[in-house]
Image 1 (cartoon, rainbow over the protein chains, first blue to last red):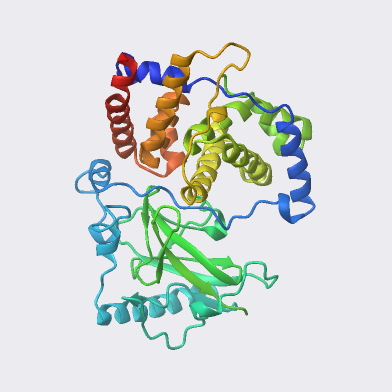
Image 2 (cartoon, helix red, strand yellow):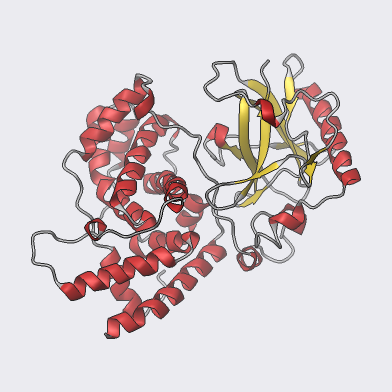
Length: 245
Length: 179
């Protein structure tokens, strides 16, 4: 089905459809880079470091796309205007933040006990911050942000447990720079007792940014994790620092 | 442009270099068109497209054949463009005449050049999310469901972005066309 558009828009589209000239060596250059990447030569290999998150939806777009009665609670929806949406969601009181951290710890340990009995696991999102003040993280295996381990590190990936409370969600997936923001790569499973969604992912040591993809379309930050503003669009992302084993 | 024969994709997935080259040949111009319109200059667009195909090659083994290959390709390309836009934003966004697609074999038609430039300027002034949605829908001819898989946005949100983009372009370019 095509929408109706007027003659002017038709002319614009017609102009934009003109294909650009392709350099004669374009395919050869791609193949050369593929070969170089296969050999692991730095300049031609592509890094995932600079991947960015989806464009945040405007507030009215979110309202339009969520059918009434099935909408995620405001606190769990991604996007929104920068001041009225994401930022508002993460203004939490200090006691609440500590409560979140403790709940995350408890849920993490309970689920980890069943899923990962023999492997050391780092619980994600354990350093919630309120107004840039770190909240206590007793017992957590997380390095401070100042001690970031570079991604060039050849250390083995670390098992990290990610937990999200989203009882109304039908599906939750973990997306981040460690899985190329692939919404199908790392689905979370729901714990029927607690209602929490969780997954254990193997993440290389270093600083990573991530978010949760709820119901396949709504990006949600981790309320228990510190967040950073993406330098490209100002989009907020959750941050985890994975320490060395 | 017709969709590529899926047997070529399957051969490329199995490591057939000739098939992968055919796949690049088939989609390069379209990818470059999208990237030029998203980024506003051919140098960054070339880089984004090259990166995209290198990534496609690296991830082909994970490609789910139940998906449309085109959607998957544009998802990767759109991501690369967003990344490149971050770099572009740190420089001034100046359109260069040579960046605009045109038939270099014919004498320049000044009106046509002005019209093209005005379209590019208006397009560049659109919010990136609206520009992306407009191009995917009206230039690449994708369905909203496919656009949703590419952009991560819902269908209603995408329709709104396209509608707003049309309104903005109409407002900006009506005077130019009348002139």
